[in-house]
Length: 264
Length: 376
Image (tube, rainbow over all chains, first blue to last red; front, side, top):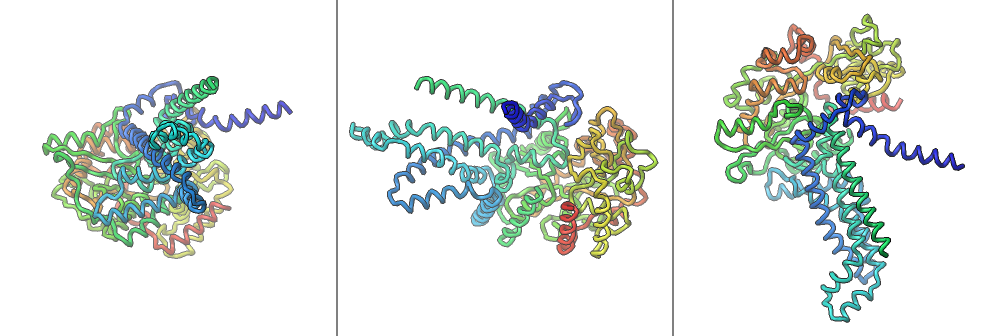
């Protein structure tokens, strides 16, 4: 039984990580091929750092992800607080369901609907380019919001409501009580929400595909468009770098988590 | 991903009811008199400075400033298929100044008033375009387009596995000796094309019986096939995973560069076969036609045209390119012979065998047959 479970675990990890490992290995390939390894070389990394268009799309993607994360975190937290304070039960449920729609809706529907709306509004104002960075940002905030709300709401529910009340009894204004007591209490939820919003925005393809305009292409779109010819190994190099950056971030966040648990 | 283009098209239809490409007002003069040029091209279809090549967009920006004393900022975006590009433009969602569609799409866009007539006074280098590329079916009066590159479909085979004697015509892709080693296109137009060329049928036939015959042929090929592929063909041929497949001549050289030890890729043209031409056009939503024409003219100038032809490995319709010493030297005699095969009358052959826009009814029928090819 024990060997069986070991084999199972090994297989599981193999399937999970083999594709990443292949990508990693071939990013150091000297040739252009994904099947034949001819020798170790950093050529594709050099190529990557000379490919201004790809680097620009990486910058675009990061700029978009960070902006979407900040906006949706602030808006999502505010929305969660508002929803939690609603005393009318059916209204709270309705709002809760409504905010979940962008999350459960298929991406392609969200993308098309948003594009139709943007083009319609663009027409009203007589713009030649209805789609731009701003439409992309609005779209990303739209689908990131529910994830933030989903993370913050349970934290609010878990919080003892007498805590902010106590702060107010001791002379805090409601606003001050909110920032001094409520926010620190729900901070873990806000942070998880922010991280989720960031990752959702980072790897979104479908919605971006429909809502991006001239002069602002994100990385997933750029890679998709390379398929007339083959995707160049530069992309393996880029994926490897992204993989390690994210791995490092995960390690750091896990280590700090552990540290905090020890303090508790 | 096919589904994506389909939905984009649907979406374009919906918005198309509201408006088409164009409509909005100019906004191309940005801050401090900097001009903006929006270019929309296939991915990986321009020399972009990688591997020490010529950076076409950057060179244009420098050249423009030196020549006209004004800064120009080029937004260079890419698309993955003609349908993607068509959908984005016809939805009126974006405005581009230069696009590079393929032949049948140019015909369709011209039909739908989505292209502007070019002012050839601003494109003097057009004189260098070979006469073979004038008056083609998609733009019979040469009003809308300037050819950028063309390609011809051929059969790629691995000489380490396949007998040279067998390597002729479309028959090789139906040769039972190589059962399980053959690759077929994973899109209906190209896949049916191979069968119809083999049978000597018209690839733009309006007769359903012709399509049925091609369908039978594809079904007969089924047990011999290793798979239906698009750009996966690169890795499969390079590594020797499969031995026979049809693709564009330019792409064959990309594979040749990366073939594994023990793999010996060769290439030939079956008769008849498919030709395509991609050409530069100005869509009706263009914000600065003169600037777009200057860009097109620049793309035809010696340095840019040669660099692009070398980068993409596709044949160039530009006389300056295929008579350029350096270009001929860089590519080598064998490559040139394959890329630019001797042809009696290119225009006639091309007009006969190129894919046209099929009527909707035929497209639907083709798609139904194709679903069966894929499922069975």
